[in-house]
Length: 170
Image 1: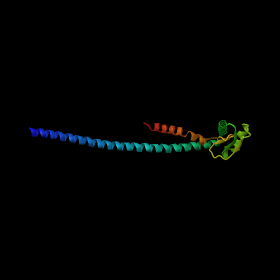
Image 2: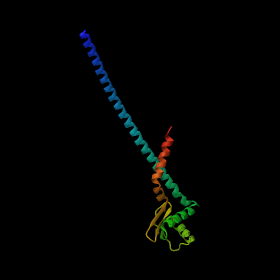
Image 3: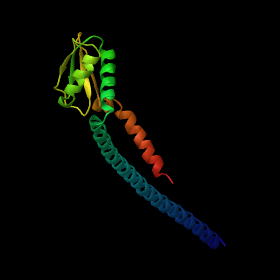
Image 4: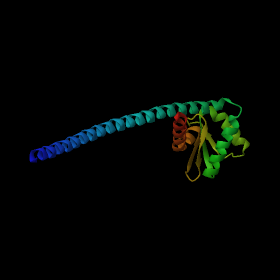
């Protein structure tokens, strides 16, 4: 009877050891599966960020090209006038208005019409559109299409990313 009791205890201990070993193997397998899934999620997220950034850069380049093409429209005179006014209000009294060579004649016309004879128009700015105004106190106000896009960069990038991710959701 002792032998069968010993055998039963040994059998029970063996079963407990086998269960413990089985759980240990399952835990290790689960841990490995979790690592694989986590790595795949990280790779997916990295790829999505990269593709989103590439698409954002292409969209930004398209926007820059579209803005630069405004120069050839009848509305551009009003746009340039507004950019000059905004810069003038930010700088206060100004001595020089820097413009792209393509905008020189138009800028002279706008400055003359606004009765600002002391404002020198200098055609040395490279821009798709806009101005740089230099105030009498040395302040410089850059008000170009490119500078506006640059100032809005963080907001535009977030907005773009949110729209792309929202658009890719099921």
